[in-house]
Length: 315
Image (cartoon, rainbow, N blue to C red; front, top):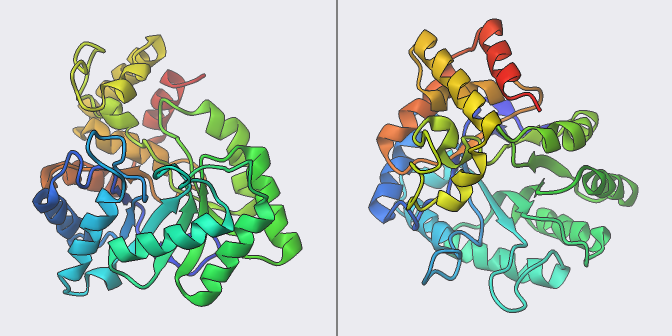
């Protein structure tokens, strides 16, 4: 277990992504995956109010609703979990952003769906340039003081805006972001490493990378762009197939052959070798898929293996 930044919120170094709950994983499958994840001693579960509004017929809140039903089964499930959710992406007409009015309403909706009285980590899903940072941070401060939220985090921020938000918290004596959730993996490196990593290091934030496995690309599930044709994540996976992507897959395959470990485990282990990475976020649609994720935490890459992966993914 480790702390999220300077907080006392202890987490294991792997987060279970809740984007698949109610989408590519039905309720029964989601429950099985959640039970298996927690039974192995892991505790951070990340979701968002908007999951899975992108799917035809869904309105958002599907993932939180399944989590709420899982908590309601009892057995200490809620107490074993560090629950992270997010707010800010559009949930319907007039339902988006980080205004005080909207956050006050959205957090109540999330609490109701999640069937809980508090959220451990409430995250701004994306920056809202139309709302003053002071307004957003003041309402978060209000929620933390009320006990409805324990800590706050940011996602999809640019480095300059993240720094501005952190300085606003310091100057105004308001609750501050403790975590950052960026798009960061073995293929998607440049933006995080050049723009965000310096801010993370300076303010000692804990990083929870999403798309840790590149929507399945880094697992080796898809060897070519054609392999991904027709897959539910085709639009997400397709962008990784380029010359550099081919080099990365070849390097992962080589390390996999040498170590006997699955490519998914290797991709996660690489992330965990980077500075300030607290817990990569990865999804699973079966209990079997979890095993490779667990191995990513348990295994340790050699310096030579890290070098091979670094060079293949250089930008």
